[in-house]
Image (cartoon, rainbow, N blue to C red; front, side):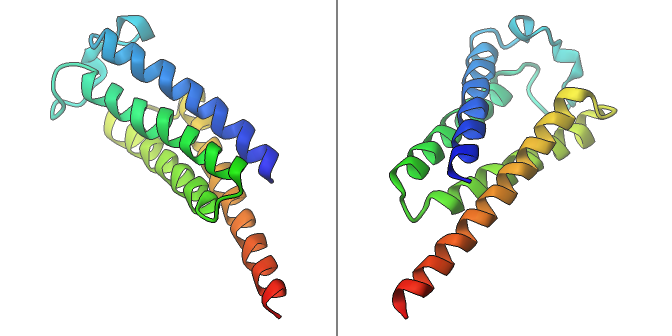
Length: 136
């Protein structure tokens, strides 16, 4: 589970950094091939805010979770779960708010979020079981 978590988190983190920096650098969406007209009306007229969210939540947070997993930190599996759930929520809101008809990228990210949540749950269960065995 550890290796799978690391691989998926690093891929997500790299993509989040790339997308986040791209939207922050070009808030009109031109670097990512998107158009500000795709955004809901309640958001400011560009991708700056979504870019910052991408950068932090799906760039930095997955890389922090990766570091925790690699160190064997007790907070690692809850961090993996949090990143996975955040990604599921982000994709669900993106599909629902923007009204995307489930394009492949959003479906892939939704699956990645579900996979990270599941991996985190399995890792956390194993850690708890090992702690219980060590205590007895």
